[in-house]
Amino acid sequence: MRAVGLLLLLLALCGSGAQGELQETETTKTTTADIWAEVRALRDMVVELKVELRNVQAAVTDSESQVEELKAELMVTNVYVELLQRENSELQTRLSSSESELLISKTRIETLERENTERKVAFYTGLTNSRHVGPFNTDITLKYIKVFTNVGDAYNPSTGFFTAPVRGVYYFQFTMGGYQTGNMGVYVYKNNQRIMYNLEYKEEAGHDYMTNSVVLELMAGDEIHLVLPKGFSLFDSADNESTFSGSLLFTL
Ligand SMILES: *[C@@H]1O[C@H](CO)[C@@H](O)[C@H](O)[C@H]1NC(C)=O
Image (cartoon, rainbow, N blue to C red; front, side):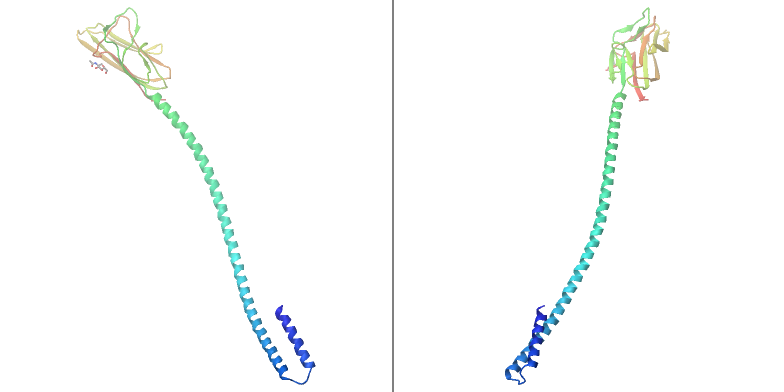
């Protein structure tokens, strides 16, 4: 704008020169020279401005391409953020399903621990220290009162009954011993039902033994006990001649 103004001023000055005095004085010569100097300066300025303009244009182009680059980068970033968000929500889904799996496992472990505790069932007992038991004129339940082992407390020495705490397969063993005893005998009962006879018509005067065992599938609450048959007898002392033992082999 300033350059255009100066040009107009210059033209006005030239015009007045042509129209005005015909005589050229020294002063006029000087003035003309000044004007031309001014014109050259202006031309130089225009050249400079052009250069500057080109520089500015280059800078603008540069900035524009930078903006484009940034836009592209932003787009990539957006896509990346979206991917991360999706991944994050997938991870959260997996985490919560892991948590519920963990809860199920915990419950399962608790059940297994309880079952494992219930599974610890084993007893080993001796009949008495007071030597001869029987004969009696009726069947009697044998109460093995020397309790050496009773893990799980399934055997009750005050009744002589073993009660299965869980459904499972159980192993029972008993030894009937005699010393100068008449006929020895033991019946095995499951609940109210006799399931085994063990009778021995003893003739020797010394010690005599008989051992037998059963493997039984029992329901929780089923009872096992031994009975001394009417007319038969047993012998037990601190030497443990007559014993009764059992254990849970595995649950069902
Ligand atoms: C009888 O059995 C108990 C338990 O096993 C034992 O402590 C005791 O020594 C036994 N008696 C004899 C004389 O072996």
